[in-house]
View 1 (cartoon, one colour):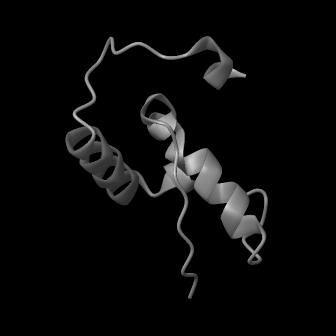
View 2 (cartoon, one colour):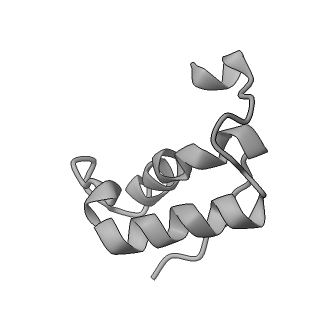
Length: 67
């Protein structure tokens, strides 16, 4: 069981799985684990984040957040 929180800027929230993976690796998750493979759960988490942050396709993203 892991209980860790983190914050991301709104325009980086779409990439939450990357940040979550990095943090879970510190707790022993193999680096080769693909969170996207959790199809239904991943899709539900992604849609929940989009809804809570009122994110829509085409919203602007800061270029420095793409690095």
